[in-house]
Structure formats: C-alpha cells, structure tokens
Length: 179
Image 1: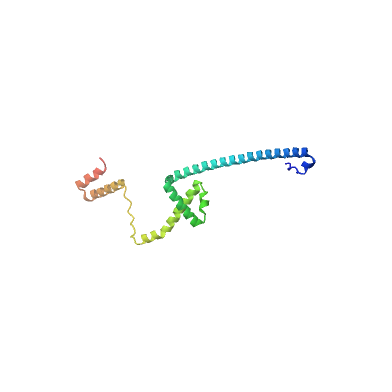
Image 2 (image 1 turned 30 degrees about the vertical axis):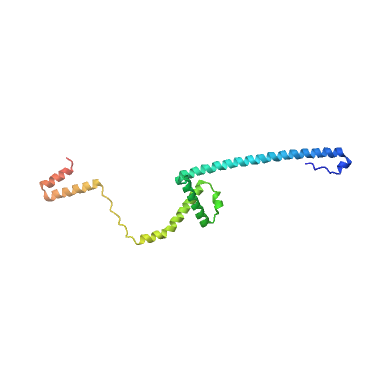
C-alpha cells in the first residue's frame, strides 16, 4: 500500500503530489471495499453458525422432551432446570453460566439423574430411621400350582380307597381318573 504523499512535494512538484494523492485514495477505497466484504463474510458465517447452533439446541431439546416428557411443560422445565443448576453449582462448583452453555440432551439428562441421585442419597438416613421402628414383613409361601393340588388330592383319595376299601372312596378315586 502506498503511503500518503509528503505535503512538501506540493511545493516542488504539485502534479506528482496529486497523482500520488489519487493513487493513495484509490488504494484506501479498495482496502475499505475489501474490509467491508470481509466483514460481510464474517457476519454471514456468524449468522450461519448461530442458525446451526439454534437448530442443534432445538434438536437436543426435542430429544430431552422425548426422554423426559415433563420438560415439555415450561413451568416444570424451569423448575427442574433451576433445581439442577443450583444443585450442580453447589455440589460440583460449576457456575450457572457454564451450565447454561450446555445444551446436549445427554449431558442434561445425566445431570438431572445426578441431582435425583443426590436427593435420594440425602433422604436415605431418614428412611432408615423410619424403617427401624417397623415390624419386619413375612414372606408368603409360593402358591401351589392347581395341577399339583389335583394330583395331591387324587393321591389322598387313592390312599383312602386302599385303606378303607369303601364304595364311597372308590367312587372318589374313579372320579379323579376322568372316566
């Protein structure tokens, strides 16, 4: 790029001064046009990047709502995100601004799970105290298979027939044979 002509040249060679001045102004205009085009390209690239980021955010939000339908309700979503932000920043030292920069649904889902886990872990001692005073539950016996009950009944009736030999016991035993 040419430099601005020396004003002293105006006294010695005014035509050369005017020629150099014109060349300098022409280069300045070309430089300004190039700079404007570069600025326009940068703005265009930034706008395209912002559009891609916004589309990415919307896609991840849709996936988060698919995985956690309660996030579709703006009030519930705000409450959950506030709770998550407070808990994560308190427990892990991550600032709310850093959390706000995260939009990947997998990371948000993981963070929500971590918050839920922390809450459950905090409630565990209280639940332990509540359970300690309660009586233990007895386990019930496994219910017998209906076919096994019929076989057991048939064996009992056959044994009664052998033992007594009565007509009544014989009829009961024959009824089990399905005749």
